[in-house]
Image (cartoon, rainbow, N blue to C red; front, side):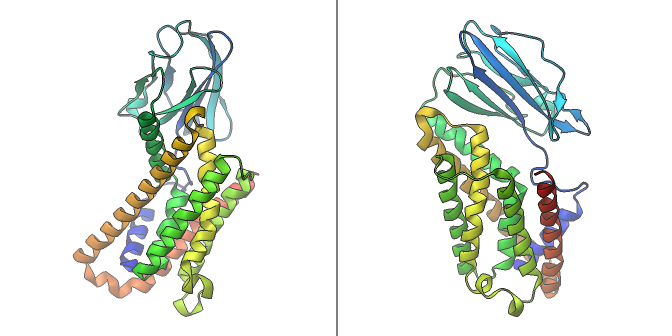
Length: 332
């Protein structure tokens, strides 16, 4: 199975037409921050597409009047602009949408406040480019919303998925693999909660570098023959995955801080986001194992060249992760 997963990785990377980024296409971001009276400050962030802003625009409730937005400016990753909107009837009951989103393959995260300091979050996609602002989110809506955000974040986070994929290739025994994945889950759940609740704070830049270095480490170990690998990673992979999982959890927490948490339901939203991350991770693992099983049934001769495929895959994984390391150091 390990060899067949390596082949799948090689096929996927050979189809990659452009340099790989940890998050290949950043989502759009719309924030409506409540001010005094009936005014909202609107911040709008559009993904970059070949040096130009993606042709999508926010649509506020019909009762809102807005000042003409200035031309968007490029901040190094996306195009940003901001303006003021006056909504005498408030946001509740109105419809917020993104015109043009249905013609794209990206999504937009909408963060809005009905009252100052009371943030809610909604994810819009090409299949669902608008929503009606509820007067108040119930527990069920909060749970469903943040589970969906967690799933989408992990599936869009190629760096986290590549770490899990490298574990699948490196750990051969099913029991040890189960313990390694469980340890990774436990570790990033702990730091996700601690960082989100303000108990632990670290700058995001070094965290992102260490996340990429964790993948480089696994790729290096995968490139070595089993007898030359680090004794700790070979005998106790769960310990290694737990240590790196603590760092990956800080990366998840940074994303969750950008999304924002409803002040009245912080524990529920935190739990829901973590559940979504785990569901997305399990979905990815199940898909990888399924593809490996299908490849084994269709071409059993591939197992003969398993060691060579694993080593070539390690070079691909390590090259991508090393690129991320230098990219993130350069962004300091």
